[in-house]
Picture 1: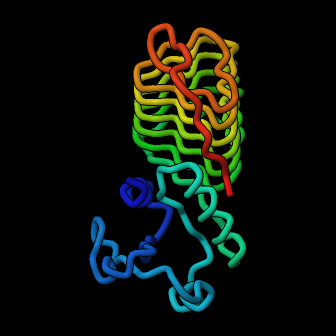
Picture 2 (picture 1 turned 90 degrees about the vertical axis):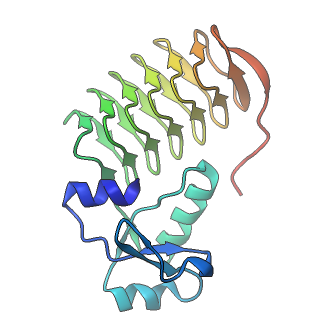
Picture 3 (picture 1 turned 120 degrees about the vertical axis):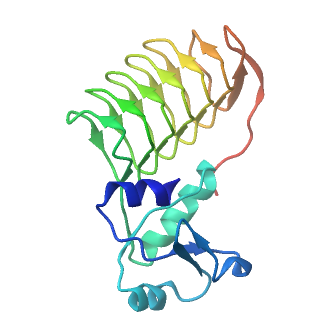
Length: 203
């Protein structure tokens, strides 16, 4: 999906896909060759004559770790925005952001580094998406919602206005969130209630 969005935007020449799995070397994704990313990334960057990279990993923690590694090697992350997405010119964005096909992001919203807004997600006005969170397909954030670092908002979930989905938390698919989601909480249902705790944290 990342490759598709990059190719559709016609803003980038996609020269290769880096993968840790050596068995995938020599295969292709949408006509783009897969290269092994272990070893000397600086040498590989020089060989390919590139300094820009997009990270195509859905897991928030793995995506964040990989982005930090690539930055340490001198790569600069690009923002991947599918041309069918609607992003207001009054949205503030960091780096390494992914916004996929059909997503809508309205004015006053702030998107920090390494956030993924997935297919057809709706982000209304004045929301704040913190670093490395992930808004799944068809999820809806109404006005003035804050989603914390590494949090997930599941497919088809709806978060009511003026609420916080705090860091490390997870909102289940189809949930209707009518109150703040506590840090590290897992919620589901309509209305959403806590069904567990999420212990995972960044390295």
